[in-house]
Amino acid sequence: MDDTLRYPIGDFQPPEALGPNDREGLIRQIEEAPGHLRRALAGLGPEQLDTPYRPAGWTLRQVAHHLPDSHLNAYVRFRLALTEDVPVIKPYEEARWAELADARTAPVDLSLDLLDAIHRRLTLLLQSLEPENWARTLSHPKSGIMSLDRLLALYAWHGRHHVAQIDALRRRLGWSGVAVSRA
Image 1 (cartoon, rainbow, N blue to C red):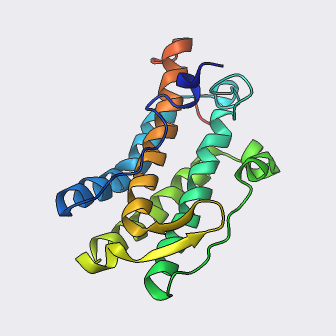
Image 2 (image 1 turned 120 degrees about the horizontal axis):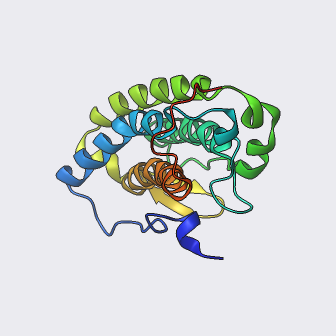
Image 3 (image 1 turned 90 degrees about the vertical axis):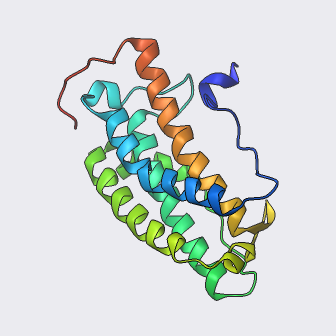
């Protein structure tokens, strides 16, 4: 299968190192992600929202619900790493979460509002960090030890990644001018 459908901006590449300007840019990307998701979903009706972004992929509705699920976990992970010494975090089965009834059927506005709130809090937290905080780490059972710098880069990429999936589907199917109410 063509991985450009799955990873339209490329797979996540962890940064070698981040400086203050890099972090500022990544925090801005996290701050702006909810608005980009709203724009990407604007005007789509139920049929469009229930269209997979790629063959055997999630529907746009599932993607819209996945982002706040994932970023709520990110918010908790940052807080754990800031308050505990190398906490072991609990992964979750994101594919199974995407199959739950709310992820398959709920109005996307619920998750857009949730993502707004999570990102406002996360942005405030990230902007408050001192330079030495970025070296704090957590332990992911599958990915190993991860610094807050890596987490910052990962979740900034993650928001762009899913918005790009939606944008790519809209382009492929000619939905750029769709003006249908959202469900």
